[in-house]
Length: 224
Image 1: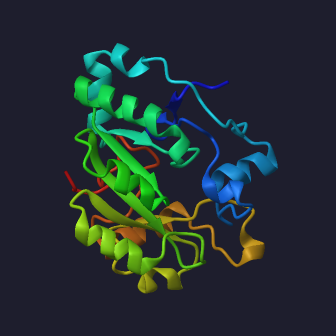
Image 2: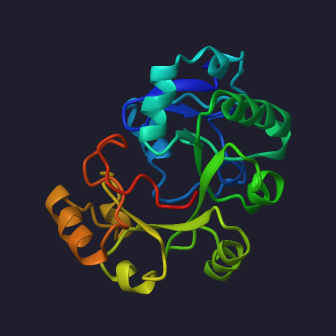
């Protein structure tokens, strides 16, 4: 069974107390989910685990590791899974340990209950609510309302088609599809050059122009 704290090639480290999510459990996994795509193709696929144990690993992080992760914008919460209330106590323990160690946390979620439960936790630097234009993300009006209510909440949009950019211009962070195998759904795989061109147009709102959080100029937004 994998640990809740794992190395991550993009983010340095990430936190996942499960590698499942409510949408997948309902049989409604996001059509563009990179985790599910990896499982289908067998490439670097994460086995579905209902629970990943946390054994206080954060408290053993050395100062240079904490500093490195903070320079990346914080440690990523929900990389291969998403929030489910059954893991509330474990997540609280992890966030408490992060706060005690001075480690910032950035969360990306489609579960609004996470904000209701943890939106004011001091370890959280920023919470991204994920939306899209294909019916798999948080409803736009709900995302806008929560952004207005919570200083730490930003709206992150998944761009599957060029027309999605204008449709979700109100978003704070844009992430462009780079997964293969989605052409049949009408989704475009954006090249690195195309993403860089969009970054010039959209300003400091495009995620993953460099492929790694450490070198990314956006650092998941400026919320604090």
